[in-house]
Length: 189
Figure 1 (cartoon, rainbow, N blue to C red):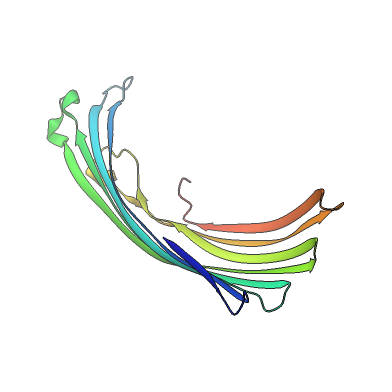
Figure 2 (cartoon, rainbow, N blue to C red):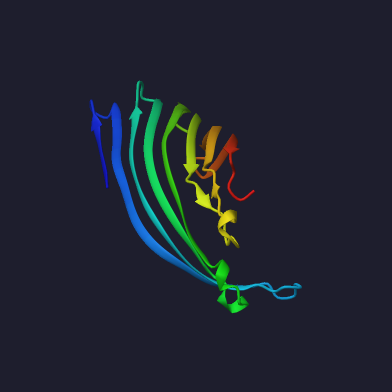
């Protein structure tokens, strides 16, 4: 859902919106560790759920005809469950079968700020700052309940500075940007 509009005869433009998702999934698997002194063979019948919603808003303010100042904010709320279900019966080890449920709940406010200035009709410069995140998750394929652990949520801050231009009666373009992205708790490392 999204709603937009203008205030003061296009001096201020805004967007408001929301997002919701509720899903369930399964991840059936079979793991065989052949070639080892003691081969392990087990079935996994994992189930997972995700319920997430977000609200966001953005505003573009035009103090002058060539200057645009933008600001936005997003609130996110994400809940995950992951049920690890291990059946070691194929290895003759059904005594170590287990079911373990991991739960995560992450919330964030993520802002965005940007400035865009048109130096001429064919050249503009801009700068922006924004944050984002990836919600926490769980390690893949643990062998026992003690090896189930949650991954920390990934946070990111991004800085961007650049220009956009066109020339030769708008038949050619030249754009350039420098940016820096800083990650905290990068998932997958």
